Length: 279
Ligand SMILES: Nc1nc2c(ncn2[C@@H]2O[C@H](COP(=O)(O)OP(=O)(O)OP(=O)(O)O)[C@@H](O)[C@H]2O)c(=O)[nH]1
Ligand SMILES: [Mg+2]
Picture 1 (cartoon, helix red, strand yellow):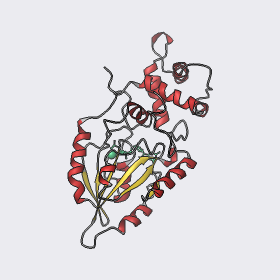
Picture 2 (spheres, helix red, strand yellow; picture 1 turned 90 degrees about the horizontal axis):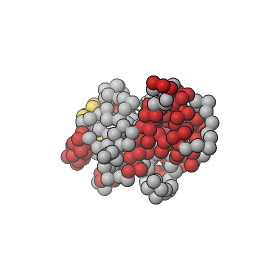
Picture 3 (tube, rainbow, N blue to C red; picture 1 turned 30 degrees about the horizontal axis):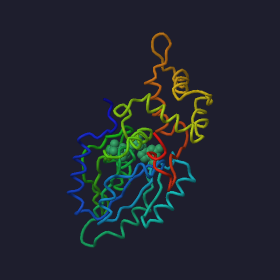
Picture 4 (cartoon, rainbow, N blue to C red; picture 1 turned 45 degrees about the vertical axis):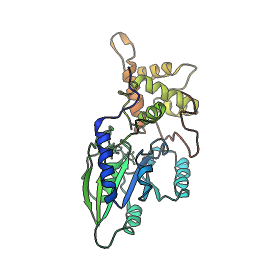
């Protein structure tokens, strides 16, 4: 039977370790993907928010729709949280560092943990905060597998593995895979997930813009028909000239998640959750 959730052992171990450490920490910085700040919320942040400040960094702002990011920032700030939107590849974390410095106890370093779901940019943020490339960064989810401390100026910073909520709705996990935060190959396969993404883009009038990167246009056809044309365009073929649909799906999801198809935001503040929007 196909799995609907990717939840390897290192996530459960990471969550346990973070829980153990949390009393010792002064501040949590939660990284969420600016393209879907609700869906990419950490299952852990609600728990620690009861006794420690949790600040929000919306990452990958260069891949999200500008106007939607502005609305999300107002939303988080309206809830009383400190929030910033960042292109972490540029590493400009000065506003965050200035705000954090105000929380530093006089007698020791400030202890801060970077938390969030997989592949949102936690380790990249950590490297910018400590001022050097110390923590490994990578384009696939699950690069950081354990909790580790790093030293910055007046700071001790914890990097943590991306942790998903195994109890979230199946549709949440599918959408996280579109963004590169879950494993398509584990939770349904590239073909099925890419077809779901194509369907979502068509229903939200974004398919034309996404396909334009490959000089293709939407037609009256099923998502499978669209994916087949993408596969043909990209030369994802098997013997006999048939399209390798799994490979086409992989290429489609990779192109979408890394922003090669353009800037897309999947949701706005207050939108109904995807499990209410249908299968
Ligand atoms: N375009 C863009 N890419 C980013 C940004 N932040 C991170 N990335 C990319 O996202 C990928 C994941 O970055 P990491 O810092 O490894 O993410 P992580 O949250 O630590 O991931 P795990 O350790 O796997 O949970 C890398 O390929 C980064 O280059 C950003 O603001 N913009
Ligand atoms: Mg990491």
